[in-house]
Amino acid sequence: MADQFAIEVRGLRKAYGDFEAVRGIDFSVPSGQVFGLLGPNGAGKTTTVEILEGYRQRSAGEVTVLGFDPGERSRALRSRVGIVLQSTGLYRHIRVREAVAHFGSLYPHGRNPDEVIALVGLQGKEQAMARTLSGGQMRRLDLALALVGDPELIFLDEPTTGFDPAARRAAWETIRSLKGLGKTVLLTTHYLDEAQALADRVAIIKDGRIIVEGEPGSLGAGAGAAYRVAYRDGDGTLLEQRTHDPTTLLYELTSAALERGERLEALTVTRPTLEDVYLELTAAEGDDASAEAGDGGADGNGAMPELGRERRGRGRRGSSGDRRGRRRERR
Image (cartoon, rainbow, N blue to C red; front, top):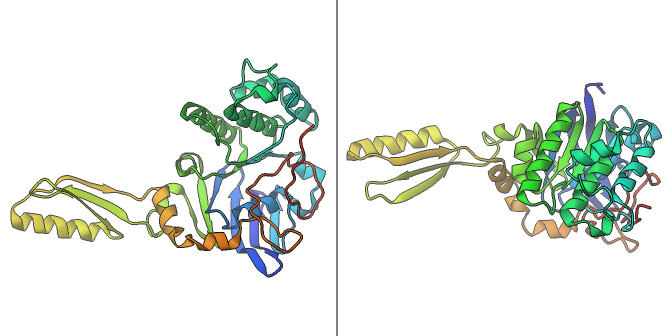
């Protein structure tokens, strides 16, 4: 696999008994890019990311992360990766700077703790106990713990959950700065405006398969979502039509208006957003998503519980193989 790709996946499959959560997906993430992985609950994205992080073993396929097989969980790979989990369990009585410094000491070339604290916007909270932080501040601390090791590749799972709008925008700038430093980022988020603003490329997963991949701004054309054409008729009534062929529709509308001697006031043509594409492509997911019972593994009785990405701890620890829950506190 080529060195210019931080992540390359070919024919990836993951099955839990008779249930196949990931069904032969292929994608590549070039070094230095932000790649967004999107999909409804139960689509297979969590399982995919956990395999890339080394938390789960794949059933089939070829996966390379920074030139390593993540299933082997080598120290050489883990020292070059940072992970922000969707939910974590940091020891409540540790101070912010103490936590960042401790995690930095676990890496061969950790960054200055104060520099990282400033980068994530926690200045003034260096001596605060983790238990006193707000939800948004805890997410910033999670990000700091992922960045203090100066990783080449960062996995960000819902990194701005709990942020107010101003904090979200600040976090976006932090993520953009990582790209400016040549870092590679794999982003999973349910904020589609976030993916549109940050990602160089996105892939949408449904039913364990990638159904579309490309640049966020280019997915509207031919990806399933329709253009919106809006205008006011001769009575001033606002009308809106959706079409996959705006050129033909505009010709028909303007020709008819000219024949009537009318003008189409307030005429606008809106290109499909990433959210439009996502909603249209995943609309059929509906009630079927619940049947998949999430992206997690089977429990002791063979059931398929929804893990909800509530994994505890950081990506550099833990044994290989499937890990169910991972609810350890960081200590």
